[in-house]
Amino acid sequence: MDNISNEASVIRYFCTAGSGMEQFVVDEVTRKLVAQDIERLQGKVLFSSSAHITRVKALKSAERLFLLLKRDSPLKLSAHANPARVASVLQSTLLGHRQEWTGAVMTWRRLQGVVADRTEASEGEELRGEEEENAGDFQIMKKRRKMDCGDDFTPGKCGRDTTAPQANQHSVPLSFRISCKCSGSLSRCLSVWEVSKVLGGSLSGKLGWKVDLRNPHIEITVYLRDDYCLLGIPLTRLPLAHRCYIKTTGLRSTVAWAMAELAQIQSGFVVLDPMCGVGTILIEAAQDHKLSYFLGLDLDDGQLHKASENVAFAELGDRIHLIKASSNDMPLASASVDAVVCDLPFGRKFGTKTGTAAGLPLILAEMERVLRVGGSLVLLLSPQLSFVLKKILARHDPGQSNQERRSGSQGVTPTLTQGTEPPTGPTTEPCPPLASLKHVATRRLTLGAIDGLVHKYIKTHT
Image (cartoon, rainbow, N blue to C red):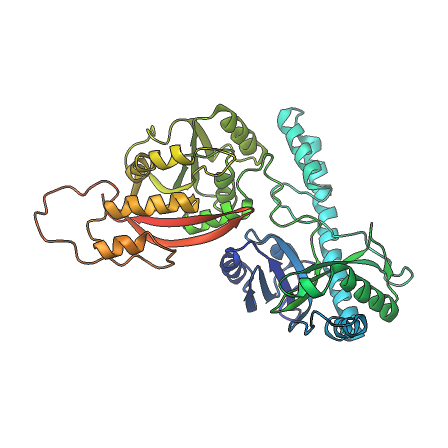
């Protein structure tokens, strides 16, 4: 059953992704799934892979996963098109041939069957293991985690859920519903209700399917934009971004994972989050890097308590250690950590924009002090704090000209900062604080209602 996806059965998928996360998805499917024919769109990534479905559903950077039904050019509709014209364009563009739909449904059934078989086997093994364990708080937490993730959860593996109940392939007509999202100019001349009505009626007539808005066997998702049309079948009941190993959520899991990726963590590394909050970044990093060690600092007792619960919930207490301490005065030796990854608090939730900006130079100096030469510093900041950060580092960069300092505080650059030759003069003077941090990349990501900027720096010298 594990070999059901092989070189002879390449499947076409697409993922949704938060704004700014598309390249992370491209890199992940390339590395983990050996994906081919990758197409990057705004908020979407299309790819083909023969990897097993459980590996595809284990992607960490994507929001939702779909089996691709159709990718087409945008609809050609005017704002004054009559209903008959709208129905004709929708049918000709979205419906396609009967064989395309029946073939996609066969692939969907096959993928759902593989997941169901593996889930039943895993649950049987877990049940036998639980019978051998002693009763206690740890066992209770495991049971609670299984409940939170659905009946198909297995320890250390998640996302193995079926989208909907299985239909008898021959005797029971397939039930379905349409989920549609229109954006751009199309949203002004086409309603979601129109798309659902036309496509739903056509599928019922052509394939004999029955509409069921409450508990369908299958869901058809339609994305209509000014630059493309996409149709797909969701392959998971919950978003991929839902992490069954996290009890209390903090920073969005996909963003936390992306920050850990930018840090390029290696086996044996010691990774620090000096403002760990509920520990999301540390847990995401620890899930992917089994041979590294992680340290979280925070001054807030409430946050540390939640972080401790999350670490225990994820069964990572042997590799993630939490300490009550200030990021302004870390109880760590100089050059003692290999990477620093931190989401500095900002936004209405924290109400600390002024305080964080004022304390940023001292926080940066402490991060630079504990980071070893060659180590990575990855920071998530608001656009306002990013502006402050660039001004601070520009003032302390002896190799940066006035023109570069001005340009460094404007916009976002994805490349290594290019400095001029340092000024000539005495070489015995020590480098000023923060002079060792060299900019590598900046990524703008959407964090819901606001944007954040992820900055990466490398410590080049002591």
